[in-house]
Amino acid sequence: MGIRFTEEYPEVNGAFSMEVEKILFRGKSPFQTIEVIETKGFGRVLLIDDLVMLTERDEFVYHEMIAHVPLYVHPNPGSVLVIGGGDGGTVREIVKHPEVEKVILVDIDRMVSEVSMEYLPSVASKLLSEKVICQYEDGVAYVKNTAERFDVIIIDSTDPISVGEGLFTREFYRNCYNILNPDGLLVAQAESPAYMADIVQGISHKLHAVFPKVHFYQAHIPSYPSGHWLFAFASKQYHPLKDYREEKYHQHALKLKYYNSDLHFAAFALPNFVKEIVHVE
Amino acid sequence: MGIRFTEEYPEVNGAFSMEVEKILFRGKSPFQTIEVIETKGFGRVLLIDDLVMLTERDEFVYHEMIAHVPLYVHPNPGSVLVIGGGDGGTVREIVKHPEVEKVILVDIDRMVSEVSMEYLPSVASKLLSEKVICQYEDGVAYVKNTAERFDVIIIDSTDPISVGEGLFTREFYRNCYNILNPDGLLVAQAESPAYMADIVQGISHKLHAVFPKVHFYQAHIPSYPSGHWLFAFASKQYHPLKDYREEKYHQHALKLKYYNSDLHFAAFALPNFVKEIVHVE
Image (tube, rainbow over all chains, first blue to last red; front, side, top):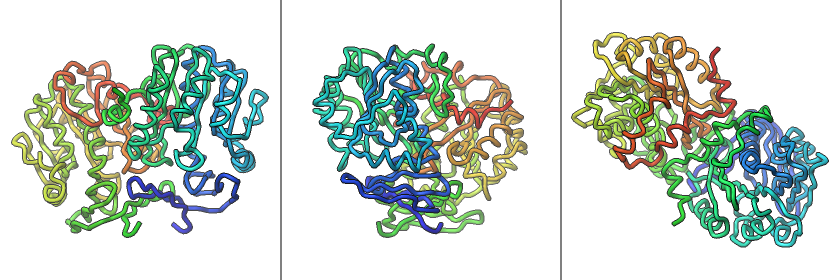
């Protein structure tokens, strides 16, 4: 391997490297450093502050799992809020659902969308969908102040350090709860149980303090630390399995690369060590 | 990070590194180079020819999933053959089943067991169980020539390169079939669908040519390439889900860290891209 990008995994004194063919973009926004690299094995890769945000090779796993799980549980998800997700991958999956009438995307950093539109169009292009409104402002303030109400909120955040930190607090979750309709639900990316048990446990505790129903589900994302990734599912009313709309999934017949109806159920079956981490008395 | 061990992932022009505190053992057997290192994040790690065989941090996932899935499907697994697995981790899980009367472990390399007994006793110590017979010889020749018959065969091999190559052929699978009892079944570690689709596809084709029932199941193993790992389940008669002995699982009440009965079902629900890889017309 010649030139390589290396992401450190400090939780396990480890690191993951990819061979770099080209640095396509490097810029500093007021919030973070953004880079796009061309790699041999993972296609184009979006980096923020030296962490892999997505790779063309496996971004479909994350984006399908964060979007379709909530949208096939809520019976009529007309309005969806995405916090973060400026790269557009989550929006791309959401707009595959004809029931969704309006998507508001709130990302603090306009440059993430601009760069993704230019270098990762297969991920970002649906940001231009007429159903989608992009607002570049602080998600923490947005959920506190907006008069909008939503059926589904998806928290597509970076890690709970620096810019992303405010998206992992109890107050933030409380404000999300307040702007959800009475049968609303929320999904949040929830880090790795294999490497970041403490963070996962914190997310579980804080969500349980706000939502009556909290569940976690998992997926295989090779380019994220440990490859073992969790999502939190927090709901006012609907149960992720009992209220699953399997008939809608079959009716839509979307061509997806990871998600399917068997996997919807399976993703909520957690290994014993993960159950212990997310368990709240 | 100071001194590090790096495993190359040539399929994706990538690499995974761990910080090394100490090199505990390094030796060359007639078959391969064996090392045990002490790492900060993964505990002790067994390396063969510079590839991670197991780490104390996550070996439980692999060993629980390769052993308990077949043993909770076969109604009365009295005799079990393990090919490879000289480190003893698979045997440790097998002997938790009181129904198992006899385990024959056939590994080509005695040094793997000797080194594991000395440096990884929490993994290896059940090699000394009175139910276990260790035979250090070529597994390919063993399955061709033995007069023994088995209820369950577990192929706990290295990758299909060098020493492990013969354990991935149709002829080998055919000989396994021949030494299984009429209701016998086989499980084999089956590499990563995310990084090694060709190898996985090959395993599927070859097993389908020999066994009437072939299924694949998956697990999260962070220290293996991509963290997304498959196991093949090939059976003469029993179906991995319809014939699952859930009552036996609850009756045993083993204390396991990964495997549970919900996860047994869930592990067989594969992502769409994996279904395509293992599909055989």
